[in-house]
Image 1: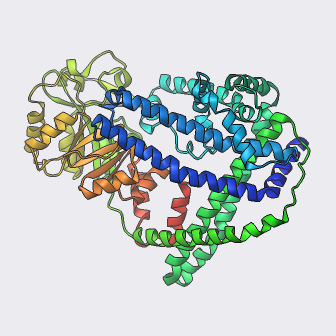
Image 2: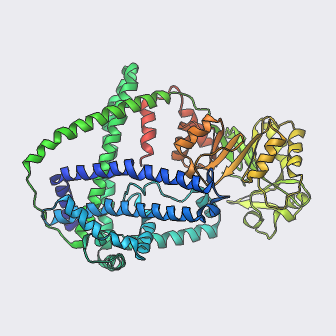
Image 3: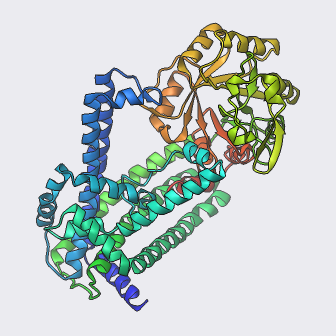
Amino acid sequence: MHKAGQVMRQAVHNIYAYRLDYVQVFALIRIFQFLLIIPVTSIVLKLMLRVTGYTHITEQNWQSFVAHPFVIMMICLLILLFLLFVYYEMGFLFLMAFHQQRGMHYRFLPLWQQLNRKVIYFFSVQVLFLIVYLALLMPLASFMLPLTLTQSVSLPHFLTDEIMSSRAGRLAYAAVASLVVMIGIRSILTLPIFTIQPNISILRSFKQSWHFSKRGLFELLVLLAMLLTGHLLMMLGITVISTFPLYLIERIMPSAALVTAGLTLALLEMVFVVLFSLLQAMFSQVMVAITYNTPVLGKVRVVTKRQRRYKPLLLISFIVFIVLSMMNINSLEKSVYAPDTKIIAHRGYVAGNVENTISGLVSAANAGADLIEIDIQQTVDGEFVVFHDRTLRRLAGKNGVIANMTLSELKSLTIHQNGYSDKIASLEDCIEIAKALDVALLIELKAHGQETEDVLPKLVEKLRQYKVLDSYYVQSADVQKMAQLKKLVPNLRVGIVYALNIGPMEENVDFIALEESWVTEQLIEELKQHPTDLFVWTLNDDRSLQTFIEKNVSGVITDHPDVARELRAQQSEHQYFLQRILNRLRFIF
């Protein structure tokens, strides 16, 4: 622990001594990111769509899209751009830390030139090792290497939810995740080694990191964990202190609450950006110190002329603070509303029930869901059964394909999930119960390819028979079928389900159901202009639910309708601005 404390003190010492250097570097990184990286990525995407003739990319067309020669070339360009940005961003921090810890004088231009000399490896086969290295670090990047372009990278929830729905899937996921994390941790020092040592290749850097981890990995991980813990505690303390005046003003002088909230949020946003930047700097200092065993404090450079740079820095900070405050005041003022986002129970209410069953439907209605989503398929005798999977394997433990069985055969079976048992229901069963409970259904048609030619007229007739054409919703991933259905019954609310979408959407339907990973602010605004409703699926954590309810999307599809309803109720005209700020700050963690 003595060495750990010494390394931490050295890191703090160096960052303070060279604070102006870090301010300049992080300012340049952020400017480069927002003025070049993000715009270039957007332009390249639009160019790919224009050249290929696609309006947007979905799970139906992505394979043909990425097979286009121009798209392949552009994807390679974007990957290279991403790799270079990460390399220069973290490489500069590692080189600065290395020189500071040895008390060596340095200038930015020579450091830049040293990094430039290694760029040749990005145009060789060895770049594949760097791609693998970064891919392995993705599960760790959000809390160990907070790189600006990797913080939001994760597996879509619908994939992990499906994997985690079975015991075999959970075991496989745990095994693969453990392996990836283990390899990622042991290769974590590849980038600092590669950037600091002038004559070493990416492959040799990977090998050296793997070799080092046999003796010093535990010490490094303990230090990084200490850094992260201290960072989170500091953020919590600053948040409490900064929001306390707002807490008092909202209760003593409510008329000043909006302006105070805007100022408070702007202050916290700026402080959090600084803290995250400091965390990156601390990570780089600790990783270099442990890798190259430099426990002695570096010498402090005394450059009195640089003190004059504080004045323009303070002026810029003040301008940024004012601009952010005005933007936040405007944004918070617009957030004073009661959202009308529909709470949609995913396959009924699965907590304490089996999915897509009558009991799940009843529980969802009792939990306050506005809509209840169910999955239907056509059976071999042309009827509609409420069932999600193509086979009986997961829920019934039997071999059997839904499309090859009759409705009566399916309804005689018992299905099991999470320790609960129930019977398979027909579409008519669910509609009758839903009407009795006075709740509407969102019916998803699962197209298995063996439907009868009149599958859509049959579905319409069922809905017309129960007089629910004007109140129910129908969706499917089959774009062609939904277009036909909309033409067949214009007054029926018809939607398309997408697990993936990149680019603008101009579908001629009433709503889009999109997996949350692909929902952007721009898309939300575009759909509101049409207008087309947006249902976001499947939101099962409080943070995601709060995010999209606050954005007032048309609907959130969730396994926890009770939680979603409570979060929606909290977002009202009477909610304190302090709570709105805390809700937004939760998204940063």
